Amino acid sequence: MAGPSDAEDEAPGASGVSRRAIVRGAVRGALAGSAGLSVSGLLDLNTARTMAQTSESAPSQAASDARPVTFEAVAQRAERLAAAPYREQSSDLPQELAALDYDAFQAIRLRPEATVPLGSRFSLQPFHRGGLHAKRVEIVLQSPEGVRRFDYDPNLFDLGPALQGRRYPPSLGFAGFRIAFGFDAARPQAQEEFLVFLGASYFRIRGRDQVYGLSARGVAVNTGLPQGEEFPDFTTFWIETPRDDAAAITILALLDGPSLAGAYRFSVTPGVTAQVAVETALFPRRSVAALGLAPLTSMFLFGENGAGVRGAEPFDDFRPQVHDSDGLVVQTPGDRLWRPLVNGRAAPQISSFRANPLEGFGLLQRERRFAAYLDVQARHEDRPGLWVAPRGDGFGAGAVRLFEIPSRTEATDNIVAAFVPEAAVEAGKPLRLAYNLVTVGPEPAPALAPPLARVVSTRVGSAERLRPTNPPTPQRRLYVIDFEGPGLPDDPKAAIDVALSASAGALVEPYAERVPQTGGWRLYAEFRPPESWPAGDVVLRARLSHAGRVVTETWDAVV
Image (spheres, one colour):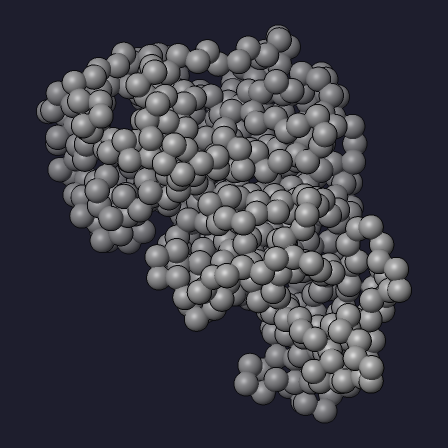
């Protein structure tokens, strides 16, 4: 249901390591300097330029057009594709590449001199095809001076012992690519990787000092529906070479899949907060039951709220929490909702949050303390959230859908969030939209408005321990919700109004108090379950008001 993140992207290979682990391994290799790029800037790109100009292993590039390709030209190409029957990419990957296990794939290294400088502050490195990364993408480099196709050349790579002596033609292409950036303008050659396009329409981005976590993707088609999900592919990328002093880069992409084709423009600005201005034109070949716009895919194994749902099996793990994101935020005029993520259901679950209009949504990582995770290598506390903000005419009426898929392994991306429009998506009716993607680190964050206090933790325990009854009623649960941020009163004697609701059973006896250690406020409320449980989740909601106005997000959780 989560797409390549639980099928193609996450299926264990012969060594039991998922594609997600392969991507992380590639990322770690780059950040460690093994691929020529490093956090400390071990690669001098001036040297790379000289080597690329003089070495036989320099990237081979074939001229394809004298004029740069525009977004509208890509959109016209997508429209022509959508007017014809879908043609699946031929399976032309040589058998020895298709059979690569994790270790053999990791042994393939791009030679440092094959790094492609893009202006003075950016550079590009392609990914070799092989193993789970079977599909081919075409990469085109363009500048005002012209357009050149970036062809595969075996001299670009050290193929490792398993493929020693093998050579492949330019038509092999690449599996994807990664982009690095010199964050320090005074040291443009000291570059760090911050953006990866690899697999279907998936891409990852991080801000400076963050590590890769959740993924974005171009589009989601029929996620969670009985007919099965489709995974359209980015098939061609046009990467514009920035001017020497530019701090942004533009990437055009062509998407193709059974139900639709599309054109994308990604205007990417790296920094402490990375931003991507996305523009897309989608051309349906046939009707789409559920079209997910601006989809985000993440991992949630377990967190501070325990198993999260009734009857879930706990995790026997030395770490207190394991997740790339811990909640969904949905913002509509006058309200911002926080839904803590859960795992452990018996079956996948879809939650829907209507928005008309939608001001924004995102999967965030709000817990930012190392002590909350205790994982030195994974660094979950440094993983970015991603915030989606529609531009222009917006997304129209519809709903943010949250897909939570049971998982027992952190190698599986089991969380998907996307906006699904209410209007029917029909063949021959194109869709155009624009939105911003913004990485989110510690909050408060400027991207999230209005300035409401945010939910920073949700903890659940037995209500019997604090308020025992005779005879005991172990079904009673105590919810403890912490709020922090602007708008909360400093006076511990301030009058706080609490709004509570439950779709079954009742939330009762609320008590709010100021937390002097944090400057926030804590809400206690007891949940008393219904005599007969409904078939689905029970939805609980709470928020705080002061002096006649709402001062916090709406906490929205399930039992």
